[in-house]
Amino acid sequence: MREAVVVSVARTPIGKAYRGAFNDTTGQELGGHVIAAAVARAGLEGDEVEDVVLGCAMQEGSTGFNLARQALLRAGLSPSVAGMSIDRQCASGLMAIATAAKQITADGMVITVGGGVESISLVQNEHRNVHRAEDPWLAAHGHHLYVSMLETAENVAERYGITREAQDAYSLESQRRTAAAQQAGRFDDEVVPLPSTKLVTGDGGATHEAVTLERDEGNRPSTELAGLAGLKPVLPDRPGHPTTITAGNASQLSDGAAAVVLMEAGEASRRGLEPLGAYRGIAVAGCEPDEMGIGPVFAVPRLLARHGLKADDIDLWELNEAFASQTLYCRQRLDVDPARLNVNGGAISVGHPYGMSGARMVGHALLEGRRRSAKHAVVTMCIGGGMGAAGLFEVYA
Image (cartoon, rainbow, N blue to C red; front, side):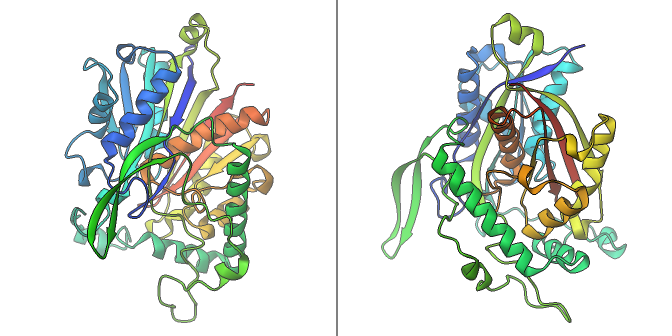
């Protein structure tokens, strides 16, 4: 039976959208940087890769066509290498890796690249945002697809009793875990610094500043519970329900990219490579769009059942922290041990470039899993439109 193993990982540091190091760096450059780095780390020539699969949630706003194809050429890979872009919103990077793995296990490919990228700074703004037509039938028939993600997070908090205090406490712990991980260098093996030109806007107009981001710039180590409690909710209060989602207990808007090289296990052995782990499977599930944050509650049990596993069998969990409200509810419903969940923080403290996050979490789970002698890791997230995705990976010691 063919197996797809991960032989290398690479990611950019994560920059703050709009005001961070990558606020004027294209998705093509971000994606190309990590593809080139992952391929080099695997000791490959550029023409040995057969296909590159890249996830991006908003590629229509910045690329015009097939971001994966553009990024692989930017990476210096041969024009003979094919590319495919995938959009499952926040699960795009995870789906790209799963698809690249299945190219190996099901279609006979030998070497593929999977990953994800998002340049929120250059897409999700007033100048370049693409108008998205809303379908009146869907709106009229109660499918609340067009509510904002903030509203879905408030729905989860209200419907499932997730308090503001619990959200803030969770967010503080995320910040602390990320700060400790950065201090201990637990992200260093995955990060590939990227020199860039930052756009700086001041009273004298816009200027460009040469910078080299070496680590994620969104973490706030000085965060305190009192400071989180003092933040004003983003949305106005609802009748009978004070709103709870703030800038402190929600994921950060960010820019970045991540990629992994996948290889058929026999080929990796022939080359003398030591894989980080193996792809074992993925599951997806739908839920009501207006509470999209609970998607993992439906995807994870489906994944575990297919592989004969229970929650206690999973040594390491990466659950994307889109919002503290949905993370807490999913953790509770799935009965996940907090000590095994987002052990080095998540999107609240690290940042959340939509298409990148799933790919970042896969690479981090494999590296952190090796440090912890883990065997099974699950990467899962909620998805805009009302879905969840969950991927299972075996970690190699």
